[in-house]
Image (cartoon, rainbow over all chains, first blue to last red; front, top):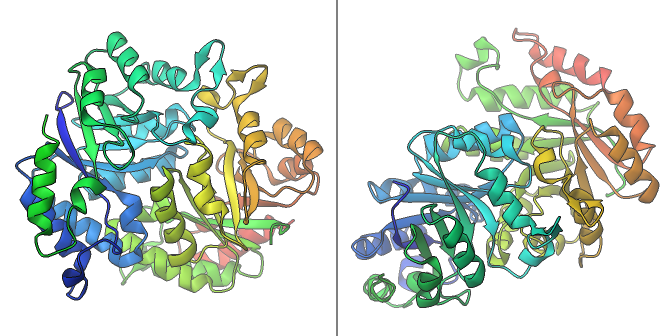
Length: 247
Length: 247
């Protein structure tokens, strides 16, 4: 499970970009993503549900999220929610993501430390990605802070590797963090990575693949696949775009 | 808005602790929390929706969360979701919390830096609490790390204070962090604090009030109020418990 690799399609619904003919029908988000999933399934090793993009549409967005999870069926499903809270709240988040949404993997935020992650890590046959070094400009505010000669993100990795767990443990690096991905791979050839930020966020698949040195990693692409066309051929064009991101 | 103070009741639904007679009826979470809200309203300066406890019940939990938000009406509503993501995802979370759920205030996690918070901070007439020093044991994994002689949580505060904003900015400290709350109050007498962890998590209201030195703060109490009785008198007993936490 933890050693899977390949293209991960990030499901980021945005009603401003869903083709107009779907927006005139019922449940455009469900209809749009369902068709994209079916057309891209042969290229995708995983799908990533970005909870933010569903939650922004309130109750109907959440309903769409659950429906889309069902649509994914046996496809590997990462729920990218970046949760992190005190023990009993993190327990509740882990239940939401692993039991209700039946995710295979989840992302968690490390700021609150060990007991905020362990609710997730105690699940068997799941994969938990801890945020390490993210792709966004704000990453440099804290993740690179110098902690006794070591950047904070690297302290996060070191400590997280020592946490008790039943789940597999992986890390999130922005796909644009080529140097740090390469360094990580030298130290940890077999630890899974989730590498978002291919495409719209500026990283190329080729450079990220090279930095990753054939370690287990999902390369996550969202907008560049989902919104390849705003016409009736959107699903076909999404598949065509996905095929260009094949490893 | 940012200078409100008083008791904040944390809405943490747990079906294992909701009175049995409600569990036999329809929509026990909505029924339970609605009655608690009505009975405690004269004592509470704010309510805090803990998203984890609603999300753990899947679609029906989310429906309950929206219904409870409506029930809160004009009561001050903090959505404690601890979100944090790259720009466009944080934009989506901020819409979910401020536009859909119509929260007055929200908690955000700082790990991903400035652009993960700014989606929230750009809202006017809202209050954004950034996690600083949390109440849980895992807080010491990272929040106390030594960054050039300064603990990480204090670097977070310092940087966050310099971020552009239209919203008011506050911070979360665990109510058990008496020394650090007192130090913060000396430096920042008027910056709002959210202080969870009174009651079940071990801090007393008296000690937290003393440390807070009359600065603007919500003292958050959950289980000790919600689950005061598992009988038919649960709402009355919740009100009685809330009255004991009056400032």
